[in-house]
Image 1 (cartoon, each protein chain N blue to C red):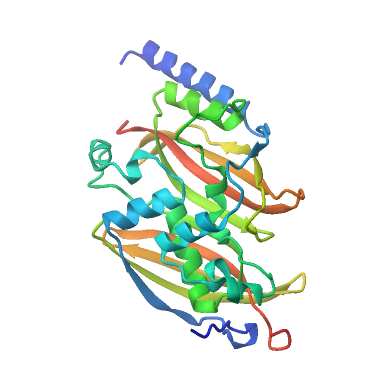
Image 2 (cartoon, rainbow over the protein chains, first blue to last red; image 1 turned 45 degrees about the vertical axis):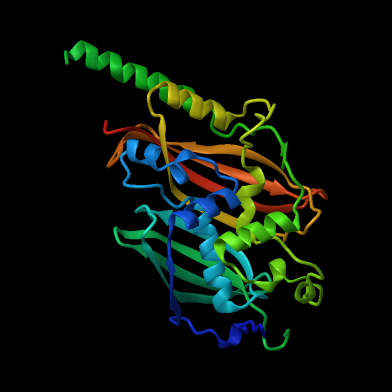
Length: 145
Length: 181
């Protein structure tokens, strides 16, 4: 597989990122929770989640980070450096949901010598928005790559 | 409810809020991650997340990259500070633990994460030893939310490597609430 990383010059403000979907299963929720060393019952014990008023176990916050990091660097390429990701978390994501990830490059700028792009993204689930977020990536330039 | 009882309740919550406010800004102890940054934990994370970024798991690709080695996915940050299932960490109780304990005892025993920001300053490499500290940045007065009455607690975790270099920060805003109140 040949890996390519976008150059900062080639990104346009307003440019949309492709739609990416991920089918969430019970295995997804639990394997991602355990990979993030999060043993909170809401992320693996269905009976407990239901007693807490949820219909099932829910995807944890570190997993949303994992998905967001992957969404951004799958688009920009491996040499794109993640600088910041902020999330506003809303509706829960359950096994059986399909998560739909969309995003847009909203700002291009240079700060302390780094060529940066801000991406605003939304991860949607059947109940509504699971989260909205903003990620900042530093990209190589035509000169540097 | 009589006016007198209502007065007592407000008074109690005022005391709780004042106790909580005293914990804001108090730096917690510096703790060491339980494991050094390592390829098996990185690979396990990538397997679960389905992240094929070759900088994380492809030795050959990573060696010829600007890093000269694989790096940990930056978004793994919080994993390095998770509490073990067993045995319990023998760490002095920090301001966050005290705030959570105080809220649990007052009946605000449920928790959800409302917002979060991660900032990444330096990559982590296999073999790195992470230390971290945390501080409660803010605690809101009692708020009525859709889930029940609760308090928003904002905490920042700060992560460093073995050279004392700042690796990243994680700011979490959690709602500690009393379900259905």
